[in-house]
Amino acid sequence: IRSRLSCGPPHKFAPSLPASFKFGAMADKLEVGVKLQAMYTDGEFYPAEVVAVSDSDKRKKAPVKVHFVGYEASDETWLSLDKLKSKLLPKAAVPKAKAKAKAKAKAKEYDYSGLEKGMKCSAFSEAEGKFFPAEIVVVSTGKGKASAPVKIHWVGYTNASDEWVGGDRIKSKNLKLKTQGAKAGPPGMPPAARRLLLVKPKVEAPLDPGFRPLVLGKRAYLEAAKDCTEKLEWALTRSDGCARYSLPVFDEKHKDVKASSYLAGVLIQEMIWQRSASELVLCGPKRICEVIKRAYSKGGAYEFEVMSMPNVCGHPDKAFVVTIVEKSEDLPASKDTPQVCGKDASGCRLAFDLGKSDIKTVAVKDNEVLYSKETEWDVTNPDPQYHYDAIMDAMKLAKAALPRVDAIGGSATGTISADNEATWCDIFPNVPPD
Image (cartoon, rainbow, N blue to C red; front, side):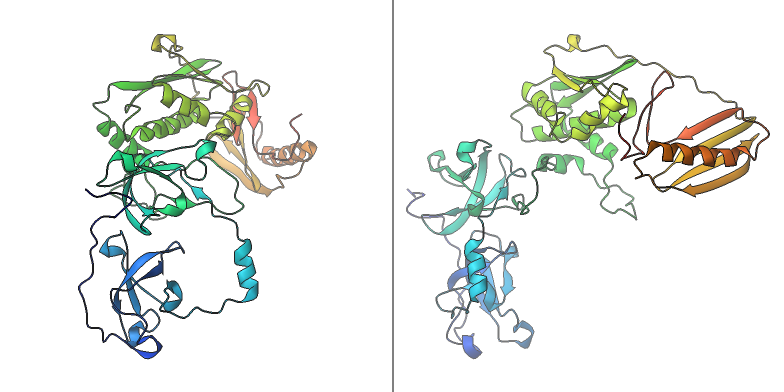
């Protein structure tokens, strides 16, 4: 019986090579099989083993090939001497200033948001001083586990050997270092969501090769979730209607459940900007509903939508609300209010477009453009009279090209209510709300 504390998994040693791999000052220092510490791509030193030493001119900058203990052969790499630590190598002199700076350096902070239950990783065993294959059991957000928030299970051993560890003892591509001085922000895209939702299109976008259309991700998700029995429903209410949607979701214990909550958040965001909303009502699995509610709150991933919708809906003093109901029957019924658009484009018409850099004006008579101009302006000016005068002056110049004005149409970053009233405009960032 093997004990986690007494010995580790069987070691795989590289085949022995001639001890004649010597050159220059290193001739009697390193040889194949020597155990040492080597710098990984993250800048940290980890247990490793020398698998080759070269005296070739092509390898003079990085003459030592190492194998990181607990990792695949594909991670083996050639390194220079300054990226190796061994009693067999002389210590390089460290400038005093650099030594002091290193002593004052703060402990590294890790971002654990990319880690999930069931993920494979390598964990460092303090008892044996080596990394071994492990699996993540749980990631805690409690203050009591701040220094060691990840519970891991050693592959091939019983649950009794499970251990709580910190980021300094984990090797995983999904574990990142927090940027020093950066403010805490919303969590990134969970690995489960990346796997299911980031679908590469057959025709790659030439200007944005990394673009992944939502429609393809949604299609892949629905295929993966076709046998799911649970669903998340929501309603987005507004003054003149209500938008409804239903999404099949994975069980709360399923490894891909975070893909469900992530996609739901994106779809709700999409619907909000399509139709506006003063309230979000959720019905479905408790934990998923709570995740969405946190995301659509102040400080959440969709704080911008939460803070913008009161202005969009024309009641800035009334906060955006998220509620959770137990039964789908308690959700508001779907309701749309179709708006009839005119089709007559004849006559004399003025049009303006308020952009961040200029005001565009056009004068049209019976579908023929008689005047078109772009007038520069300063959108950062805090004086509302400046903006009023700039817009009116540009419009009057366009009007001069027409015998009369039958209609005026405008475009700006903002919203118009069902009653044809301008409820909000985002084009004047420094003009006071009043």
